[in-house]
Image (cartoon, rainbow, N blue to C red; front, top):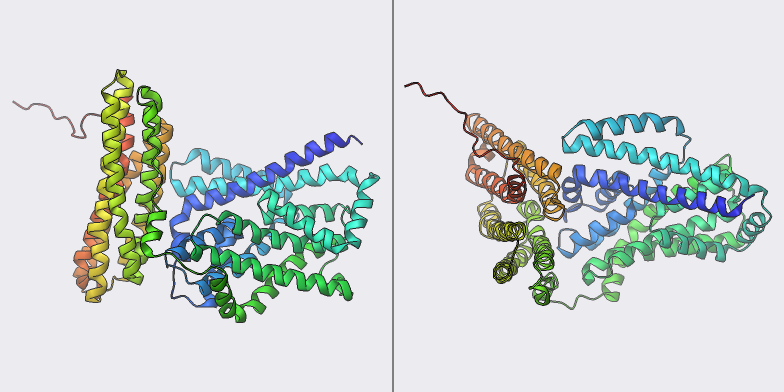
Length: 557
């Protein structure tokens, strides 16, 4: 047995597994990220409903950690309560356990089918949702392939001299096995991958159930620790959710570990073999944790508030969002580096703009004046960044620039102006409409509200695409952005026609909210067009845009 070869093969399989889990999450986020975020952000939702939403989001993202980070961000903005957020994270833990149940089945026969379907959708279609569904299919196929590789790589270890010793030691020392599970899961930053690997080792007969069980408990605690680590830079309010979830997980895991030290439990009843027992125990643990911890959410909320008291004012919170300037004055005599510095500052400016746009639709539902004013104050920071970028590029232009650098500088200046305009639209148009809606008690029709949220989702997705184009200057992505601009124009026209049809039909909500509905649609379409201008500049530079959309007509004279 060549140990080095086995370890290299195993390491490669682990990397493929981690990449595949991330690939699935990326596909889901790009296909329906705004919709998922909107599903999370609802401060009025009950705890059982929050747990169900958390489980659903975690299943789609295949990650309780990603759900935790999203929920923590919304908690910082007041769009998720601490109690609802804790219930959501408990549900997310159960959701990932369900994902593990599915992926641990023998589904290798699906690998070629998923690769074929996923590759076909991703390569042959331009529609964003279809491409990302293809990405998800391929990611699931790669997960199954990675698990198969792990099984093949670990088969020779059963005949090794040291593995039975290690497995036997872990089976006899629950504490060491538990700590190993925590450390391993934190190192690979994926509890799903960690549990799947433990199950794969158990399936090969390398790990007995007595060793796999404390490793699973450690993986659960390690998964909670990952979320705490990833949110360490957020405000205290945001950090309360992952901290509370970690306390729940750790308490439950330690209690189970304590019981194991004194009692022999009938674990054979939960599975026919060690692998199935491990996976079923993981599901049972998270289900029990959800049911037992839901009644204790209120005390946990008080505990995390005590451990992380809120000491910052809303002004301090807004100030934390202010990114440090990336404009490097020391490289202004080097146009290439200076323009790269300006690009970085544009990305930082865009982060502020994204923070302003993202919660707008939630504000139409909640009408939270404190959060509205907090977002509105960010407009001054956007204006400051816009001014600084323009002045910086103007100073760079005073030097000796190539034609390409000069054109790039004009593109960056133009995009900064557009971002500043987006900030104004949000602060002066959309947020004012939010206040008007709640002041007058207006309601959108169900169909009208669905149209508005779908348009907002598309704008958020196109913003991410525009920023990718800004950095990469990728021609195909720029083309896609122009296609999305045209689609947005068509969607605006369709929304307008449907709205008029509802007015003719006498829908009371549509009549009362007509002006607000039309103004929101116009604002979202304008925001989308402003993002698309970066693609126009790049495609024009490469001669890939027509000078006019007008159809040429023959002179009849």
